[in-house]
Length: 314
Ligand SMILES: Nc1ncnc2c1ncn2[C@@H]1O[C@H](COP(=O)(O)OP(=O)(O)OP(=O)(O)O)[C@@H](O)[C@H]1O
Ligand SMILES: [Mg+2]
Image (cartoon, rainbow, N blue to C red; front, top):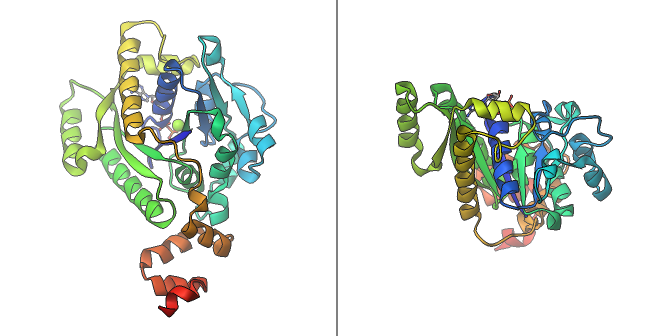
């Protein structure tokens, strides 16, 4: 199982659109796919056609990631009726808003990872749609992820937001999980004929180099139509849908290339460093822990944690 988060600090830049486009590409390719809807707005759940009352949702999973709760919160998408394959959704809930703490504890941010570890053998690819912030929910997603795509519009505000998101991500990676890698920034809503768009894109490419994905997603009305109908973009009628579906195929290819052949098990939380942090700091806020990690002074951290007496001796 590989896990990919789709994020951005700024709202409305196309996270859900990209998450659904990639889910559509993965399903079309025959990958066993799970979309995790961490956004309290639940747009990804709706886009996958999963509409209704759900007894259990991602909010329950985040409170108690037990096997049976995880299973009950996962529903089959109606996309499955279109062709063979398997695409499911871990359904979103407005209740997850209450769990989006600006200062999550170490204990809280591991819960999705723990939940996904329970269903590791059941899916090839997990795509997480995150809310537009770097509060608890998004960081919970990142800690459970192998890769993160940051979505950005080709505008100045988006450039700044993408920059901030990269920072938050680098911080988390230094502090907590080595498995997590930023795949890069995916530019969405690109208008090929717009000078402003071209200029912003070259500005972004200058600033971030190859951290900007080689593919760009154009502004296409058909994306809104398919999303509104709760249907995948692959198989939607028309030339425009075929073209944009092919773009998502290439982005997925890029993701897969970066992930490589190996499928590491969800054991990041079992690494020595993480076990140590978890044991001592279960109730501490993530920010405090990251601050400690950022000091980069081993002695200072050891003192504060009251650990590693044997390392201090030598
Ligand atoms: N490339 C595109 N072409 C046309 N419309 C798009 C494109 N990308 C996104 N949209 C539309 O823009 C709106 C916002 O996109 P989307 O919901 O994917 O953003 P988001 O980042 O998930 O938003 P939020 O932060 O609220 O979760 C939607 O109506 C979507 O259909
Ligand atoms: Mg969204």
